[in-house]
Image 1 (tube, each protein chain N blue to C red):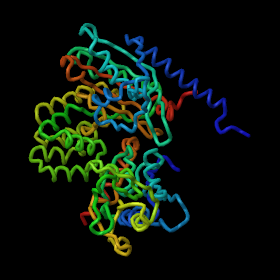
Image 2: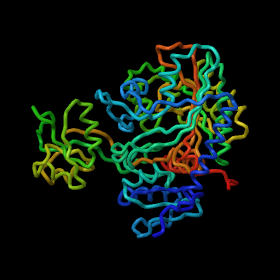
Image 3: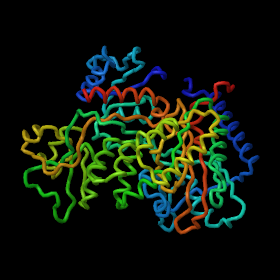
Image 4: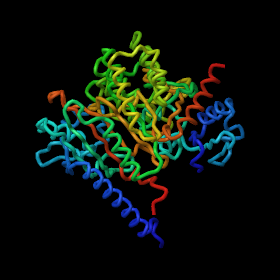
Length: 211
Length: 314
């Protein structure tokens, strides 16, 4: 890694593709292929290097200062609550954090906690604590919709984009919790040390938004 | 098998750390500061009453033999506010320094960080901001060639907050948004709370009040600042002359997680460090204490500072 370059951590997958699209629109990272097996790319013309990592690891790399800035979904920020700056909403990766289950499912069962299956136990706990509703969370790392289908939970807490997967499994949104979209985050120390480069990048992105 | 860290490297690091700490003690002792040895434990409940916005999960909790929940000290200033200021007779300024470890939970387990800090307690801001900031930069210069010093003023934010008449819960949410520099959420907050002018413009422009002092003054001109906000800017102007060429950024949205700050606040960052190498500011005693008492201090995170270091160091 070149410490003199602005290092950007991007998540692999769709969010990363959208991020690359936004960066190339402003003339950065034009030769980068997200599908390549290469993990670190350099754009010497713009003095930028980009690292592709797993979505959750974007937060770790930025918080630890390995990457100066990064692109991450608000879902992961709400779950991890990292000590970083959240500088900009990027306007893509838009979806919602929702509570979903069978139509008509009560969110306040009597005499016992609501059973919630989720990839985001922190978000679920914080949301229901505000509503004074006791819950029991089961962590699932994927296919969360299975929770109510196999009976290990009453509802799920997950990000919902179109609701297609829910519908295909006989479930529907019972309550919307939070808006989710991609955010530009920065390490607190690197924001100060590489302030000019970070602000220039943000200015490029904002200029492009107004076109 | 070859060890991951050679013993000689480890010893060199320890020697470097000891040299720096000895030099720090020498400098502050010469300036009349007395070594303060803080208690290892704090009462959880009491600490949270003083510092409502500190993340409870970050604190290392233990129970005593009565079942009371204690925490391993997460900072030293809270102890100074809680245990020393109430005993101070208001005479000669109380000048203290400490060299101790503070604790918090991290993803990797419990982290203990060595902190070297100073605290000055005096009547009516007798101990001026510039003396302490000058001492802070002097100590930093002993340990590193390269850092950015960031200066803000909590007094500016307090004046801004007091005009908003928000509930405690909403104010806490606003402070959280500002701590993250989350411009998107700040705009939503202003819209949702229907905040009117001139507070609306002040909040929406808050993250632009950052840069060199001229930039900040220029950006703030259109914001119809109150006299308390102007006073906060004047305090920063006064401090500017003591910065002795240090690379300084002024940031009026700089906000600590600790609510006891009430005046100039500052941070320092190094290019090799993922977090601040120095944090400090002017703070007020507890509400029930004498309002004429004011204190100022800072602490240096020694291990974070040593991630960088002086280029000419052997």
